[in-house]
Length: 151
Image (cartoon, rainbow, N blue to C red; front, top):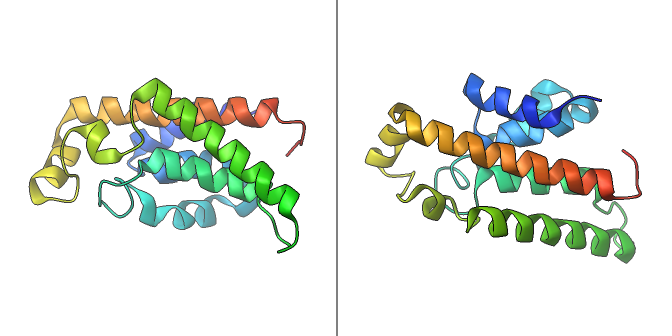
């Protein structure tokens, strides 16, 4: 089995956003690498650099939707399972990292000019964000492995 946690970390170190890194590590076998990377492109740095929900979190939530989301409006069982797994993921990430909000995790606004500069140039931030990517991918892998549905 592919080590998706390592793949997510590698993608982040290559220069992809946190959202792209987590999402593509799990979704590329289904969507293809290019489509997976494009799909998550708007979600980095807390959704288009707005500092909202961490991109590693949104990437993971998109994976859960891809794997367990409903495709029929009346399929309330799939809806409930997806929400259950999504909330389980969010709860675990917040318990581990103290927040799911990007600007709180970073301690500054990633959308400001200064914030964008810090994201590019501060190696400590790269290490910290790599940790968020690693944690999100590990929690996601655990949730997927524990769910009886195989993907």
